[in-house]
Image (cartoon, rainbow, N blue to C red; front, top):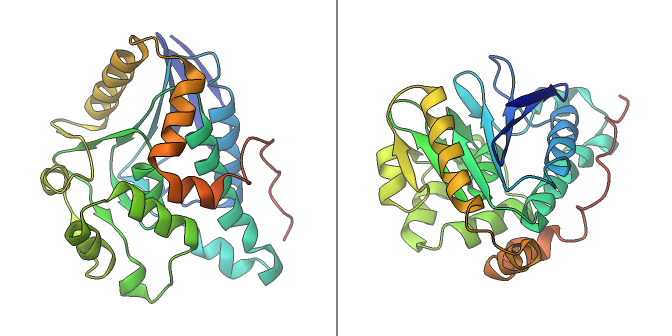
Length: 240
């Protein structure tokens, strides 16, 4: 087992699996700093057999960092949207299978990030999937809407998530096809199950280029929205 720090996240090798963990007890709000750290960590996974994204604390991610947006000049707001758009492009173009270990609440852009993986496992006893935009009066950005169109194909499930603001616990998320499994126990059990699933996928020995191209073809609306934004170096945080 090898590990290293990438600032706001850690990077660890567990066998063939590249495990990225957002660190700390906070809400893991997606600001330019965290997004740049995640992009760097994803880029470092090239030699692995599969990737898992997890988080410490009660949140997987509570969405965009609205406090950062309020403090930043309007001209810099695009750095946050652009950072997530680029991260999703990196994940779709990645030549290894990806698994989200949804260890806690995943809301708004954080929910979209979880759903953008090839597979998602969720803690059974705690945590919700929640698209909060309808409740707080915020429009969807185009690529987040594309995640939902491609990854939540059932029209009723998508409606309840985006137009009713349903807060979906793990068992119901499995029933609606939002995640693949509900895992009993604590966050470490969810991570262990996600790593085991990633190991199982890595053991298939798939051609990496084929994996990436099939993924792009399987979720074409999302790929069309993000394809011109990833695959480059993660930018530094813009100065306020």
